Image (cartoon, rainbow, N blue to C red):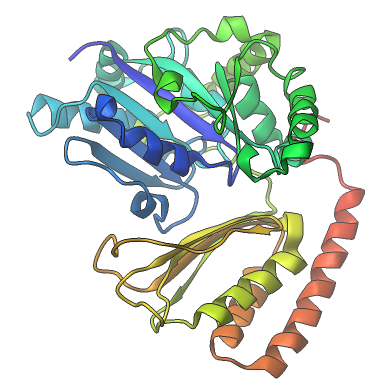
Length: 389
């Protein structure tokens, strides 16, 4: 097995990576594809939402790949290589869907010639059999500008891309679409003037075109990209493996301490209207601090088919019903990624809403809203998270 192309699929939280991946995997030309899904939380939700065919293979890692040594991209690729060598699977390409908080620099450094040094047999096998072919970054037209302004991870995701894809343009009013696209492009071009910018809703757009064979050339993306890769190499040199054991490398925490991820679960089925009210209350009060919420919900009106919930900041999207449960676990499972929000009041609000305790809900909601307003006010005077000082 030689020269297996690896593509990174990245983009900030809620940009639509899993949606694009589902469209791609339904294409017969991509039947022989291995998919690696990296999730920030402890419970893998995206794995349940991505439909992998019989001739495709999927691997899920939890904990951000860019800062957790235990979910190192080389380890995952080595495992895929071992499966292929044993005849257990066949694949022609690998697509790695990163978490929306991922810094692509360490992943790219692990996959390009002259990047992170190969340590041990595992790394040499990966270097001989896999090559980085491209980096595809999705940008949500509704939240992309805010992500670019407030989150350094989003800036780096855009800078490292050799293809940029605008998403959710179909949700923008037709009369406002052109100006919205131009405003977003005005923010993208200074960060990455080289990558083609495509529209996922444009007539004739084919997802497969983003993942055609090519060579990823970071040098063509500008001095910032080269500088970040050099900085990444320096960071890695500060945490060398112990006695050649790459699993001993300690992860580097690349996310601001305010970023939190937590999970809410519920054994009993929930009433649809009650659940919608909970999500509405949460998004109204949390706003931009609710970076991402996604999960699977067991609705009392149809326990045989779960509903999928997605929320990004102030946007809560309509529930979408799946044809069947992806596995035997029929609990409601929600994963939240927030900026500076204490999970405990969210958990209390969740339980109160689903237990139908209206007096508690509105009392707690008032307290919760006041807490978040204070947080948002204090953030105005804070420097941009992750940005160089």
